Image 1 (cartoon, rainbow, N blue to C red):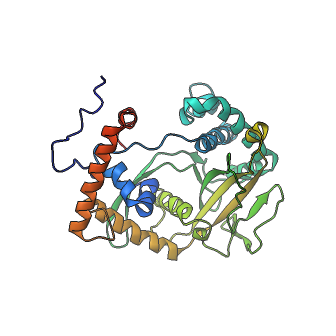
Image 2: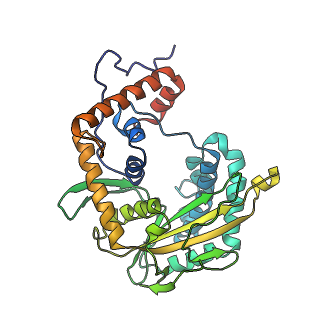
Image 3: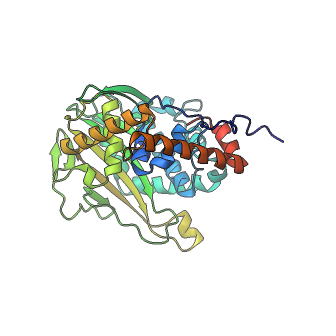
Length: 345
């Protein structure tokens, strides 16, 4: 029998716990969305592994591989995407798409990227990036300790899809979202986009204007598109040195939105739209995130974790979740193996 569970201390009345050294956009958002699961993944020791890559996730990673490879090739030159370099296409694809998904994901990701090009989204983005003050970065490994207005310091860590500063020194952070793969029903675009392709139409109430050299929907805060997307991009901006709480942050999401598929051919090459959302993350929302970030970080450092409980109740809940995590690992050897292979979160 494999020594899978030797690290579990089943005799101790209290479970072993971890204190995270930093917050990431994903861990912070998970804490806000599902604190129990946050404890199971980030506080229990050992914790639950992240879920395996699903088909929609594999599709998104495959598309990312094609678009980032192409952007790097155009911006940095052929030498930057040769074999042995991180943005060599096959290397990038193999490092981000699970092996069992790769056979179909390559063709579907390639097809989606061809639509991104055909509809003009790639050329539009490349044109804006070519005028950047410095070469854009992709999947940058960001580590920074930010200081909140209260003086609280919080270590942050993350990997933005892409970012650059345009000719007017405006920071622009972008991400790609791929939605609708094998969806059973149609998924509509979110509100407030600045352009939907191939129709080339803005959202019905969009006020499309130029801000610091970049076209945005001026009438809304990006949080009205998605609070989660806005939070993710906002934390990246602070990691990149933007003043916490005040600097105008330009957020951009290019969404590849697929239509429902009925046949095998439609699954491989479904109908799609490319929807671009770009607007500012305004100060009111930034202040809300600052407050949430400080509350979460202090709770995590105290070990109480839960924001809506008193200290004693919260500590008891943490122990319960840690014990439940241990039981899940003990009774599901596959989870334990995955946990060991992937390492601690």
